[in-house]
Length: 112
Length: 112
Image 1 (cartoon, chains in turn cyan, yellow):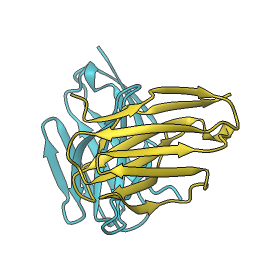
Image 2 (cartoon, each protein chain N blue to C red; image 1 turned 90 degrees about the vertical axis):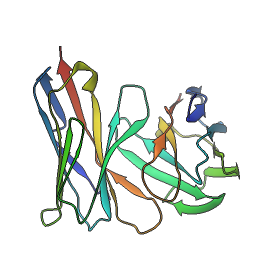
Image 3 (cartoon, one colour; image 1 turned 120 degrees about the vertical axis):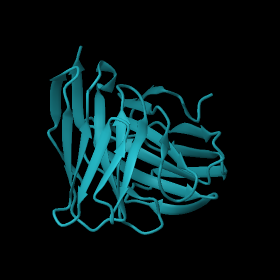
């Protein structure tokens, strides 16, 4: 069954605004990852947060993880038109197999 | 230089045909994966290989057969194509069995 669910499914903002996407999952995890997918392209790894971490930053990205609520959020600050893409969370919970369970993604549109 | 390359990018064929999708990575990674992304962007893992050995085999019809001739290649052969096989198929690789995964740009398979 699908592990991750993302909210909202679609988000439209103006350039310069912040974008927040949420992800919920069902079982315990080793880590949670966020990926970006531009239209017609493959997924690009953005950031990984381990199950014992609560917050992580990378440039304009901030990820939080709440294992008690089985949820994570991705915040993109000062968004740019180039941030327009779909964003997916993926959970790794199956030991040393590398198996990732993806959410259905949030489609972000940043208007110039 | 393309890190993970898939060929062909588009594949249009008729029901009942047999087709193959090729994947090559020049990153020196040990692990490779196949994913299927449906029309709702739901991404699900199908197979993964580590050092040419199968480590993940999800509930995928026997019509799908992965083949890894060496660590840099993981091809996907599909027999007796069905309408439900229409999707975008992504190949990915990782240095070890774990994150991050590097994705190709996908092969869009359309069954007529």
